[in-house]
Length: 311
Image 1: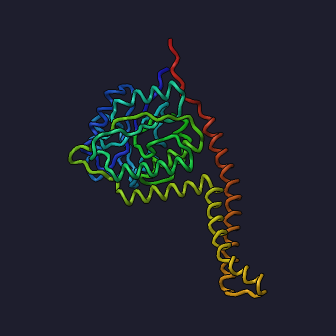
Image 2: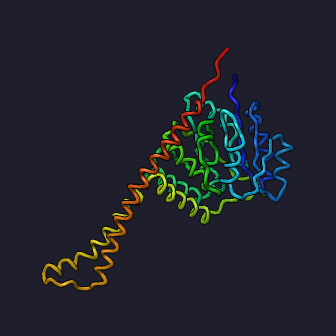
């Protein structure tokens, strides 16, 4: 029995590009079912997608994360292709990404963007992506060079075990960390990335969404790696407390007197907070292990992608 492929396209005010994206993916994946999630658009995005032959879902809650969550919840297939609706990704790469996922029995193939068009991938976005990819690599594992890519091929067991939580453009960060924390078999393939068509405007705010992605990485570190997170807080508070207390201790041992009593109280309070943070890290680390085991068991309950049997 052939594998069912679903192409998922989250869209907000993309009436100029959505029909072309649907047509391009229908041309390279003729057997796939295409779904467009109209994320509360104020233009004719939904109508254009429907006329192009896609199944249109509506998600009134604004934000790419909300649109992706709706698609993941409502669509069922063996293989999922997630791509932005702004016509910046190359549809011709999809068959190779799907083939790589099936052949190597992977759960996610990430499309790493490659381009020589400066306007397609602006310096600020390129720098931010490298910085955030480096942070994720250092904190969770170095397996992806482009964690913010909006072009991915995923298995059913990935989609149905992913507890999407975020609302905005930080959804890609959450998806990447989910794969890394679950130690899923993954790969990354290069894909060409082009400039948005004339008249199409990017919804990504360099600074606002950049700060949101940075905050998401910090929150994911707290949730998925609580011991290093709270351990760092413990070390900072304890070092500050010891640094402030050292002159007081020297004076006390020399004279038997305690100078600057308020500083001594502050040092005690900082050390108490340090050990409180360390205790929180130990407790939350146990909770996180339990959550990770439950997610792993649910993930394993879903069969992996396998190549269809030949007649």
